[in-house]
Image (cartoon, rainbow, N blue to C red):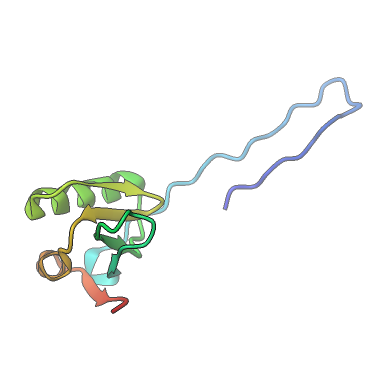
Amino acid sequence: MQKKYRTVYSTQPDFVLDKAEKIEPVTLAPERQILKVRLEKKHRRGKTVTLISGFVGSAEDLKELGKTLKTRCGAGGTVKNGEVLIQGDFRDKIGEILTAGGYGVKRAGG
């Protein structure tokens, strides 16, 4: 987690605010990860999307996984807040793709 510094005022003339460096998480091997695949319709004007969550690793590796899934499904999507969002109902196809890639897959939701 990133620490928040709330220094408003300092009486020291040589005060320098130290900012912690952001540490990028190490990407786990696919065999050690269990990704949750679920279907969602809420707040999307009735359109369905497939969400993939639970990825442990760097943002670049998550973007690469998202790009691969979008290409293989032939659909649009995005990577936001540590989740991959694919437009449409592709739970079965994504499960097969991830299982072939060595990831553990768990279907969440209905």
